[in-house]
Image (tube, rainbow, N blue to C red; front, side):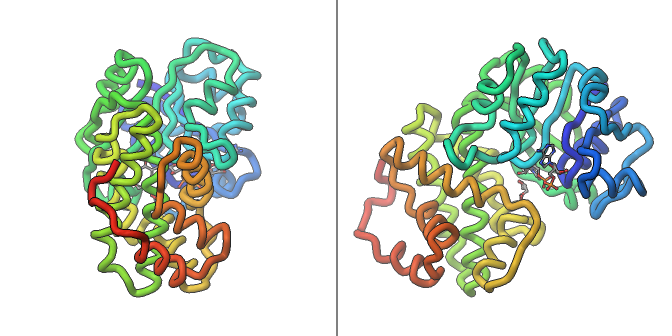
Length: 320
Ligand SMILES: NC(=O)c1ccc[n+]([C@@H]2O[C@H](COP(=O)([O-])OP(=O)(O)OC[C@H]3O[C@@H](n4cnc5c(N)ncnc54)[C@H](O)[C@@H]3O)[C@@H](O)[C@H]2O)c1
Ligand SMILES: O=P(O)(O)OC[C@H](O)CO
């Protein structure tokens, strides 16, 4: 099966390499970007060497024309502008799969909402999220992920097409919950890194329980299924994000706690603001997201923000 992957960073280059075992894959990147130029020069990046079946392409029109199934994996805050670029090409009827985790910082919109608002042509649209690091997959360690869309037949078709021994895919049935959960796990990853950086790693068990609970309450208030917070998109991604040495979000949080710089993409940063906005809009208290927000956006010292969180009034564990 042929497919096109738009975005050639850590995740896009892996997906292209992996899918090329089953057919021709066109991998598009922006000419002049670090990730594209690195691959063009050597067909290698920090993670992998591109197999021969991957065709590197800098022309967006040619990349889109090559396949009916198009994966997008770029940074979430760039999606609206990028989707506008897609309108300049004949894409009607194609299937787009967003392999990305985030929410629009200023609006709190989900990535499928951003796509639908921006595209002028009818397309199939799905998300593919869940736990998994490139380093682990390349070492042959399998994982389980979830595909979701608002079209059950499309979700099932994608799952059947891409099912493999390395990536077991589940059929998601709650697009709101899957997208919110996938984005929010990055904020919990930053929180975990903050704890690690402050020598408080033993609190990560409590973070898992309370983090999943607050995201469940938000998903429910937004009309999704709160169980999604306990599924692959969110709780199922905690090992890869709250504990893994590979997680960019966890490492970002750790760097903040230590007063260090971290330059790789940590999607949880803009997602923190998006979630705080959504909490306000839906009347849902999000104590952990608000604590991360206070540290990242308001400059509150982590110790002070943790103290405030710890001494909130007593609550029933499963309050709604
Ligand atoms: N298990 C998983 O599902 C998984 C794993 C890793 C990453 N991700 C997600 O994949 C997405 C990409 O993450 P990454 O780690 O590959 O990041 P990355 O920084 O390595 O790659 C991002 C790519 O987007 C490109 N890009 C940025 N702005 C662009 C624009 N305006 N137009 C076109 N291209 C643009 C960059 O040049 C780069 O190639 C994120 O949303 C991340 O959460 C998912
Ligand atoms: O490295 P992170 O924190 O962006 O996480 C990558 C994947 O989403 C983990 O499943």
